[in-house]
Image 1 (cartoon, rainbow, N blue to C red):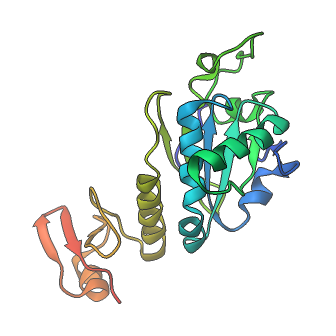
Image 2 (image 1 turned 135 degrees about the vertical axis):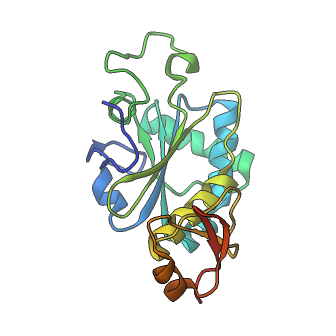
Length: 217
């Protein structure tokens, strides 16, 4: 079954290079990014893990936990982290799920139920395990993105999206295209003009269904 926005993520117990963890326990009351990879010791994925490691302070500033996933063993992950630090210049301190049984990949609908790892496999056998999931403190999926193997992920966009998700959750607003922190937000269409004036004061009506405002201080 596909995992859709606002679905509760499955509470799997998974093996990681930090030992076994429960997904729900790991998320706890935090925002969490789960990002997946088809194989260890691959070039694009190594640069991505390095980029995530470099952003440690940015994750912590937002109260975000990070959980990597790769379809290899925990021992491989430990050795791969040495390469990640060499390539990225930062230590990957977050755990990486050892999804060699494909349980998480299948539960998150990255692979079909009948998928298996053939002998002598290559990254192409698990190419669709290239996703980013943002999980809210309510254990629900808030955002997902899937990338091909030949295009590295933009984690600045993941941070921007988390900023939008957290701002929207805190203030019950929406964010427009290309929004960044500090810019005007969208007043939801379900908010009456009276309530909009009470909450935001003055606002701009671009179209009858598109109203822009600054967040109240």
